[in-house]
Length: 426
Image 1 (cartoon, rainbow, N blue to C red):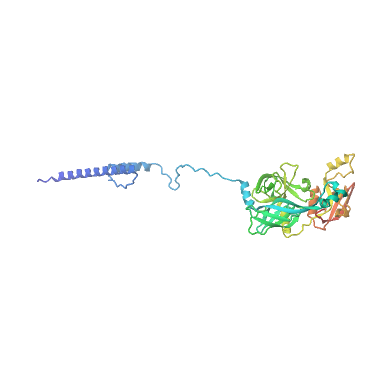
Image 2: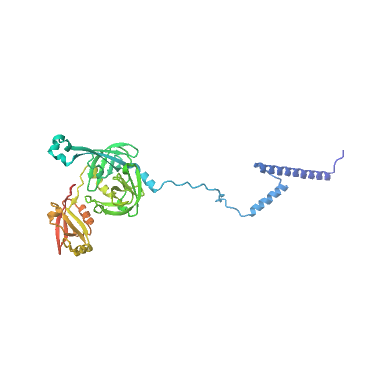
């Protein structure tokens, strides 16, 4: 067998090498195509001189020639956003959640004795001979009442209205969760219509007390209580006005400046809290007017703060007084009176407080104050209204001597009045 020449042998080896390289490139290209279909990633190291390697280099150079994207803060791919959850509740619901558990229902029982008043003919001895005196005998009657209150101390101290519990023989306190307690009336003050009731409990839910001096007209007002026997009732309104005097409301036996609100207050709400939009107690619901639509009144909580500790200790609240009935006087009102030919007396045309009546045996009577006098100043401070005079007297001390300037006719005089203690029936 003849041997191939050396030159022919080299040419044959070169052709075989090229053929083998071409076959391998085609096999690798097939594998890459197949992996792209099935989603596999197969690391491929192609021959640098193969057509596949040349195409990869071309693609890489094309990619490199494009602007590089930031790798530090890659822009996220746009995705569909999930719908924002719907927020439930409101500021009213949040406020009620904060104070609601502390609001209680107060049921009272009182036994009273009434003298029977039969037909007048039974007063005749002829009829009494047959029917006896049984028809005229006094009869006992059980009265039941209902109101609201709220816990201010975890030990079971409850604030409410005096008229809710005053004189009650039995007091039952029911919490929102249904627990019932026997309540003891620790102290009452009819003049401010405040009372403290104590139950034997521990770790009871309490109401946060706000600051009624921060309340403004137009603020939200939320009344919580048990009106008309409907437990856990909430009504919403605003603060209609501030410092509404008890005399203007028609409660002449009280000494208060109410918060007026249009939040619905009904019988049974008395003693319950009036709450602001943060769930803080700003007042104690106490009164509604039968002749007014949508107007209610609440005792400012700061007044209750001043007296609650004394009431809880069972102490009597002592109120100084002068002993006069009075009304505000302005020059315009004085002129209207003086122009009336049927006026009982002429009054000075000044700003002040006119004395309508002097109660006998009172400090005012002892000091020489008379009907028709116009009080213009106390201790050098001008008096502009009956409410202003009442506030000055209320803030004085029992037995304190007050220098009162009056206008009597055309004469100005100064009298000294020593305050006395207002009695419950005064």
